[in-house]
Every structure is written in structure tokens, then in C-alpha cells.
Image (cartoon, helix red, strand yellow):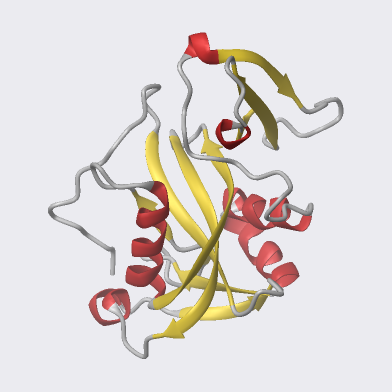
Length: 202
């Protein structure tokens, strides 16, 4: 059964991309088992729980809400892994790491549309997602590259163009065109708290 939200209002950024949020939900802080849910459109396929942001909603709050609705879990919201762009679907997804602390026996999507959930080893989840959701597989591939709480974080704020001192991009030679590339933005009046980096299609 397809999921339908009659009162949902889609939100878009200044470049016309739909704003989404998602969580990689892990069984523990070791981050070796991740929770996937069945697709509402294709129930025999697995996906990372996530969805569109609502008006005035912060990305982190949207991510927590989506995994509660789709996967029936609560937990400790961790780092922002990155902002992933899907050119084909024209959306950008804020992807967070969440350590699960509570699992509901019945939850909104299990009751309404029969959605399922299952734990996967990270390597197995990547293989499952690569078949039909390669963008979702990229989330976990990025995680495996070693994004730690103090290394390679992306942050939510966007800076006005006249605040950008310089932009640097990772070396792209030999990389697939679909691979996210780290772009670092340093504000003119540098403050360590305002440093931001963002993953976009290059």
C-alpha cells in the first residue's frame, strides 16, 4: 500500500530542490548494524527511513520524526553525515546518524501500510541498497569512509554568497560523477563554530 499524507506540504530550497531528512539508525554506537525499512511503493525492497521536511521544521527534527513514523524507533540523534543530492529526483537529503534506544512493537507505518523493518550488517545493507536505491547506499559508503564526530561533518547553515571567503573541492579525478564531493565554505569573519562543509554532486 502506498503511503499518502493528505496534508503534507513539500518544502524546497532556493535552488528548487525538495528538502528531505533521513537517519541511519544503528543498533549501537559501534555502528555495525543498521535498520532498513520496506519501501511503501515496492514492499519487497529495502530503503533508509526518511522523507520530506515540513515548513519551519529543522532537518534534525524532521529526521527524528521520519524514523519514528517509518521505522518505529526512537534514539539519540548524532552527527550530520552529509547533505546528499539526487539530480534525477531533484531533492537534497540531510542524513543523520541515530543510535536506537527504543523500538516500538507497533508504529504508524506498520499499522497503516504494513511497513516492515529489519537489521542489516552495514556491508549487507550496502549491497541490498545498491540494487535499487544507490543514493541510499552512498550514505553508508560515506559512513565507511570514516566520517567521525570530529571528521568530515556537514552542517546545516547556509551562508550568503558575500560571506564565502573561498571554496575548496576534493580531488575528483577518476571518481564516478555520482559520488558526493566535500565542499568546504569558510565565512569571511572566521569563527570555528560557523565552519561548514556540504556534500553535493560535483
